[in-house]
Amino acid sequence: MTADLVIHGGTVVTDTTTFAASVAIKDGRVLAVGAREAMPEAAEQLDATGLHVLPGAIDVHVHFREPGYTHKEDFGTGTAAAAFGGVTTVFDMPNVIPATGTAEALAAKHRLASEKAYVDYGLYGLLGEDTIAHVPDLVAGGVIGFKLYMGNTFGNIPSPTTGGMLEAFEVVAPTGKRVSLHAETASIMARREARLRAAGRKDPLAHLAARPAVVAVEAVARAAILSEWTGCRIHVLHISSAEELRPLAEAKARGVDITGETCPQYLLLGAEDYGRIGPVIRVNPPVREARNQAPLWAALASGVVDMIATDHAPHIPDEKVRDDIFTVDCGFPGVETQMPLMLTEVAAGRMSISDYVRWSAVNPAKCWGLYPRKGHLQPGADADIAIVDLARRWTIDDAKLQSRAKITPWHGRGVTGLPVHTLVRGRFVMKDRALVESARGTGRSVHTIQEMPAPRVANPDSTMTEIVRIPAASRGDAATGAAA
Image (cartoon, rainbow, N blue to C red):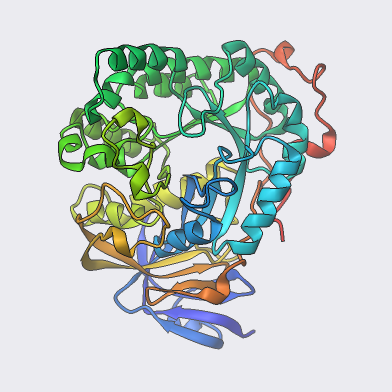
């Protein structure tokens, strides 16, 4: 058998070890991993001597802003940024115009993504009180999961009541889909922000004051109880504080199917950076005091926090440099800088390269039902690969980012480690630090690939399927595969 491509001379990285090996690729999948002399003949060969061969990162939290906000980003620029960042699969959020809360909106977004995407993608469906009835059609339409906004953020998506959340969880639970949560309590934040505004506060630190860690602690604890009661799988987005780790860990210990992520901004930035960075740092939840960093790193190491994501949330410069922090759009690009920032921590000895692969690829794939098709480099897996130079020293320059929004808090930061080539299903999408333009539109939608186990339900009588029936064909108890 002849392979399409063989990568020679690199160091292959798994979540447990590293070893020198060649990687053969055929028809978009890994054909073989082993000694150079054991590899088949190949139509193309790549010399990766001195480089490390990683499974591409899976970023389960991006905002590519299409449709509705394409002056900030679209699927073309966003997935190009992913390719440059060694990210081979992204999950895009539903707070666009129109919000991805109906089958029609989802189908339209699938068409837009399929025309432009350089990397594979999953699309979230919006879960709110007015979209519960659309859950079956959204599942049938191929959502990767659902997004529920417990607190206000960009797009002003209404936050459901606790009663609405319970009903939403009851309806989603039988599908097996995971619900990702913006876990901040809306009512606390609204009162705090109103008081700060009334006092004339508009400086960057006022944003942090408006969203104390208790908003996340309360939200995570409440969501975990509802998840335990209904059996709905949940995922806590952008964990920012040490305090919310306790309800997360306690829920896991009780057997709740709850996962969590944190982001580079919470691991590497602190409140003291507000003065240096200014309003560009505004993000929801806010960057918090530096004391939170060590507990977050420890939670990753222990498995309390499962993965690293980015909350890539681009805005153009005019939307990020206003004098009133409460009028500054929340978020900034991150999908292109996440891997270099984390590889810098590998170089500093904070974690191993295998730790990074576990948090950026293996765990996301497992938590979202994509493993073993994605998340690792073994025969049969999709050949989603980031080939990186761990020794490359360089400086992040906003002007050179692929994202349409060329403003981040990382501008001027020195890093060590750089993706040199990125392959998605065996095809180069970024090669020698250049975008492969012909790969535009080759990204594919992904949803559950492996059969997910039946959800654990604390109270079987709580299900709402008698109110909103879930058609058997839409349930999550059958693998749907990756869409063509």
